[in-house]
Amino acid sequence: MPVEVGQQAPDVTLVSHERKAVKLSELRGRPTVVLFFPGTFTATCTKEMCAFRDGLEKFNTLNAQVVGISVDAPFVQKVFADQHSLNFLLLSDYNREAVRAFDVQDPNFWGGLLPGVAMRSVFVLDRQGVVRWKWVAPTQGTEPDYAAVEAAVKALGT
Image (cartoon, rainbow, N blue to C red; front, side):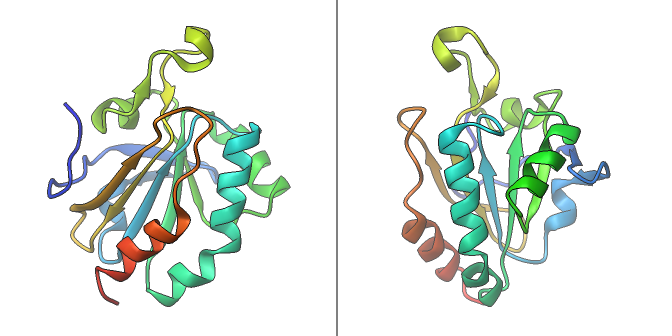
């Protein structure tokens, strides 16, 4: 069942690109932008993650944090983060716990060749971990409206 606006975000434990366990509930206390992306080193995902890297100061000003989640192994995410100088946390959902819990698992990625990766989606969580804004890409190559994500965080107040 999809996670909807107004619901508590699922509390899953993932592995950071620094190989540390991170529970989503540990991120409470600040607004959080949760970015699900299909895979590291793909064109649209790289563009999206770099856009959030380049715009991170806006979110820092709003006292918000950004985290990216993909089903890639944390070792791959580490190389991806280093290669693109990503300045926010990447979390590995290698066991697909988060994509299932948020109901953003894509069974048809690349025509079904890589089922189970994350659909590109964004969830804005308030300080208590409640979903206040949600967007799921209508197609694989669609990027989020970055200004809308920022506006959703601004609406939470600082």
